[in-house]
Length: 267
Image 1 (cartoon, rainbow, N blue to C red):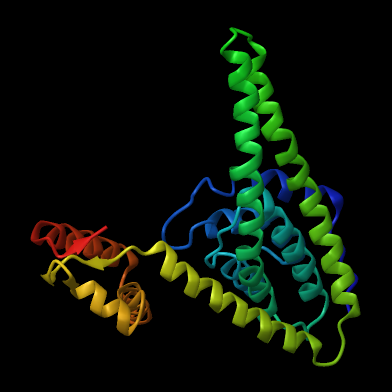
Image 2 (image 1 turned 90 degrees about the vertical axis):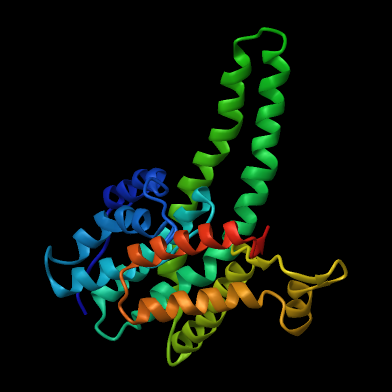
């Protein structure tokens, strides 16, 4: 087994890059590209540039990822630790890296959104506005400090704790425990994707037989959120058939415009 250890300098680079994790946010993989870019210092330290191992690792971290930016560093730290172990051991279950990311991004988003968007942001704005209304220049400065100091602390500690927790956790794994954890994490990841399908895709039929009987109401009694599920399934089918994502997006826009003109869907 090779002796491979990531340096503090490399982990610091990942931490600073994580501040730009939403710089290329997109609807196909959301934070995926930013996540891969943040992981590059780790990947370059562990794998040779241009090697198959580097290509596979980069592809792993280009998968869909989305969570609160402040809590994303915990996943980055954990991914760094797992990539380190993968480079060290030939028998490491590589699929567990993305399985862990998929299982953690939902819970971390729930915690992070509640604290940063629902608590710190409101408190910081309240403090800043109360002073700014009195003409005090400290108002916006205090608002920025009240929000960004906790954000930076969570980012930094999340990176460190994620990396250290990952190292300790991986050292204790033995037998088939990793396979069981990977299987469980995969299930949680699929649950997260399913919940995102139901909550993030708003697709309802506007047609009605009468004011009290609507097509959407009938569909909801049979299977709630059936249309978002079918739309997602159709998109997945097209992607599996190697249809270019840009054509899929363009087709979705065109269908949306036509359907809106015909009054087929409602918000």
